[in-house]
Image 1 (tube, rainbow, N blue to C red):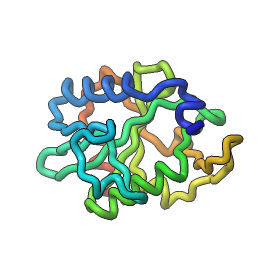
Image 2: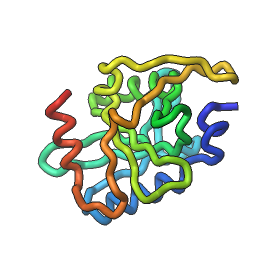
Image 3: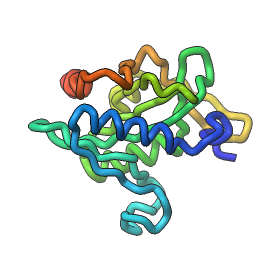
Image 4: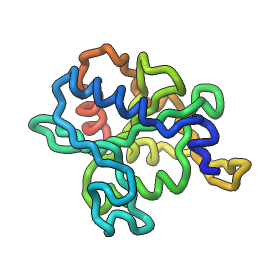
Length: 167
């Protein structure tokens, strides 16, 4: 059983929908990349080592970023996690596209706010690696490495602009 489904109990569609609503409320143009097999992406992106984020978000006058949305339970106190397979595939997409990858975490069942982190920055900070019971390898992402954003907030992507300058 994949670690994400084991811990979150769902497939994250509600979190993706909530993030989409936040983007719309803040007038950010976006493109949703359908994750269903055979829908909207080439066979090239199905090869091992390349994953698809959930959204391409256009940050006006800056460029495009890739955003992957996750709904996760806290695995350890105040830590989200990402599996090695997810990390490798998102980094593969980043290398191929030269887009910055951002991960949005919703704590399971809590859609009042989300946490956002730049994946490249998080990787550079040194991720703690551990093995799951099902054999998957995962990495802790402390909440303190993320920016907490209220779903009703209208800050826009100022945090992303700050993050780009800090990479």
